[in-house]
Length: 249
Image (cartoon, rainbow, N blue to C red):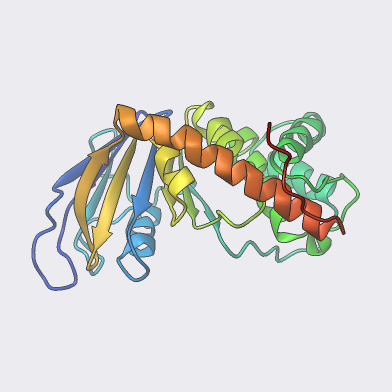
């Protein structure tokens, strides 16, 4: 699949959405931004359901310029801020089972998935770890690696996982680098600016579609440096250390 199109419907007041059409191509990512209650999760839900004018927003979702086939499944992968496993297998068994369901070599996938998961999260994930014992960051890093390397879903929806303790840039790169179409609902300014474009939600509708400009690329570097410093401080404090002001020349 090469393109995902979202055709605008109506906002919560019943007025047509100002943004009439959004197209995202394979290997691209789009940030979905706006204050709490603006409609970010509803937009992702429309995409997950492959809406055809049959949701409250009346939006239509097109794949490669056409409505999806009736009964089509496995086209959209989702990762939410609450990642819960319904089974309590060990991590290695989970990866092998998922790969087997998709007709892939599970034994060859375990090492690759774990390697990527451990790049994303500071807390190591091991094949013998139990799923129910994983921390939030471990679980999300495992799911991102699984979606990137095993799942055949061409579209990935990420709903507010900025506080998961994972490497956001590497996670986004891992998904788009494998040709996925990625939409991320977020309040995180760093994550917003990691995307080339962002759709702004207001009152349940797509209000504006904004392309990142050159000045924002520069600001991204500044914000990313601040973000990295905060992550370092977090790891230091939760590891029992103390923060100290750096000596200035």
